Amino acid sequence: MKIFDEIEKYINDASKKIGVDENFSVTFSNMPKLCDVQCNGCFAAAKKYGKNPFQLATEIVENIDQNEDFIFEVAKPAFINVKITDAKFSKIANEFVNDEMGGVEKHKDKKFVILDYGGANIAKALHIGHLRAPIIGESLKRLYRLLGDKVLGDVHLGDWGLQMGLTELQLYYDGVLDYYFKKKGKEPTITLDMLNVAYPKASARKNVDEDFKKQADEWTIHIQQKVEPYYTIYKKIKEVSVSQIKKHYHELGVDFDLWYGESDADPYVDKALKIIEEKGLAYISDGALVVDVANEDENIPIKKENDEDVQRYKNPMPPAILKKYNGGVLYVTTDIATILMRNTELGVADRIEYVVDGRQAMHFKQVFRVCKKSGISPEKQELIHIGFGTINGKDGKPFKTRDGETIKLEDIINMLINKASEKLIANGTEVTRDTALKIGVAALKFGDLSNTVEKDYIFDLERFMAFEGKTGPYLQYTVVRINSILNKVEENFGEFVVNDEEEREIIRAILRLNSVYDICYRDKSLVSLCNSAYVLASSFSTFYNNHKVISEPDLKKKESYLTLLKLVRNKLMQALNVIGIDVPEKM
Ligand code: ARG
Image (tube, rainbow, N blue to C red):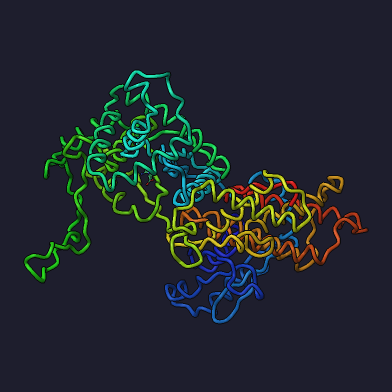
């Protein structure tokens, strides 16, 4: 951060004067009552130079150049405490309000990142299990872009698996496909309703009807080998399904640059297999084509109690299966082929990140290891699985409907809209679907992103939706409030001059907020951004409860307040934008 660089320069210049050539660094203060920023480096440096730590800190502070921005003090045992002066607080605010990035710095080293964070499956309705990937992925994409990376978001549709054969076969048995198979009637229009019935029916049947399952396997292979009419029907199913998927993602404020699916990687499957086979990595086992991917500390046999016991392993890591006995390709294969496709067609990204359920950790280990061993992914390319936890109900178990069914995404969206509408009515605000959706999505996203990614969390709509406290709607509400003030006045933004402690607290909150973008980038988590945005909003509320802005008689003061308001609004909007939250006009 620029302000840290400035402070460090003062300290480092002073220490050089006394013959200590160190790169001291500073952090935000642990004791905000005492100072804003602190330097803890004197202990280590004193040891190195054979000095007394307190003496060293004192000498450095005595040699710091006079300036109007910072006050340096020594604190026992050997800290250098730094206070930001009012002159500097004012300067910071005036500078940030005029800066497009509001003081956030882009990275010098820009990366090319592909983010794979959709994962919706064709023909199946999106459900609660599909919620976290787009929420987390979308916000990471926005964060990386803000900091200067080139990012491509890929939805990576599940459009090449058994569900295709199952759905098509069920439609066939339901008589929908007679035109194609019995040359009867006219070409059918396949609708979403048909799919919503066909897939669950087929999925249940395959578990009890072995022949049906076998037939569905065959149909899946026909589709994958583009045999007609299977392939044409498949394309129709896909079209209907994708338009629905797009609609749902759009309602969540999620968008992708690439609408590729597993099927698009199909032309790369043979190429990938060839590379892997040429490296001598693949062999046939029980008729299937497999690659061993276990490390030395994996697959350690556990001693059997009885001869009849199945062999168990410590740190199990089964071989990756690339082709089934019948020639069908698997999930692992398409993911490997997709990496080859991306590296060939899009250029070699510095990182490919997958925002996918943590329970798929084994799958991604297998995919990544095959790609690294075979060179399909060059050594310098980072392949990262960002595995997230489950959304649970209040009972701590995966969130389900009352009859134990998985909750559909559509139902969740309706729940969000209904709850937000209740809140709006209670507030006496006009209810529109758009406003309610924005608030509902804010509640959901903030509720999700303020939790550690890899942990499960409890879906507590009541709490997420509160207009007070650490929630998405509270942040929206703060911005709506500021906007309504700024709309009432003529846009006369004067120079900001800091006057009191509440204003200082706001600038401090902004400095901290600016500093967390890098932390979020490093951690691949939005938790600290959610927290810091909330701290800023609440420091603003404290200020606003104690200051009359519109009716302030002193014009200079009023204009200074307005500038502060604009800055707070910009900073909150920037954070909300990264989180993926839109702000309604009224709420
Ligand atoms: N369609 C998959 C599922 O529903 C998720 C896909 C995640 N992305 C990937 N490249 N494997 O489980």
